[in-house]
Length: 350
Image (cartoon, rainbow, N blue to C red):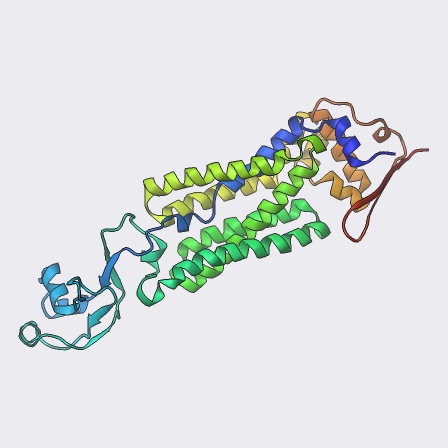
């Protein structure tokens, strides 16, 4: 009679296998998919694009163009959100009569004195009446992360931790890359939501998978290390943002890093099981699988797969597998109550 905690005590609670899998699962968390909102100059200097007047006189200086086409505010500065309505006059008439009718910006904005080369504010014109959309971008990402965590947690109970982790990374990598090509704020919001959903789903299930492979005495290492790596990653991304100063370039770097992470997470056994496999057949079959939670496999009655994983982990950790795993006939019964708590695990040998 043994529970899974006793099995981990036999094969190693925090051996080489657990350290490798913890590092492998923690690393993608460092590539923060929300790097676009690190460009925090949310209200750069700007005014309406009034290049329409250049048709009347293409050699106007910037200062004269603004004086003729943009009204001034009470403090004497040029309006950020209003312009004089375009007219079909020659430049002499405009100078002599002046323009009085104002309207909102019709052809976008011109930005100056910005800290960055390009931000989501300047690329999507999130100023004036569109300024609240910048806060919406941040909110949509967080909402996506929450919803992704809830849904992926439920799906992971049905289909396993491994496939949900992989699908979550596919979401993040795909929509991180897709957002680079988008020039419509509403499509960008949709991509940002799906990125958040994938990020939340990955983070939750990475912690669960790492935790379920660790013994009770070391279990707090999984969330601790993963959150620490996330914090370090945010510091690195912040420095990257400051150095590059273009959100699309920074986003392309994080998207590429997620793609690399997806490859090694999908083929995680290239890192793990070659340490203990001696036959080419073993490597060919099992190197194409990421390590599922043996605890979850047992709860689903997939005892042969769980036994195989437990045996390989024991070899990686240079420990002897539990004796009851080496008997010719083994049945492990794992039943779970409606609240997901473990009730029984038993080994029956003949």
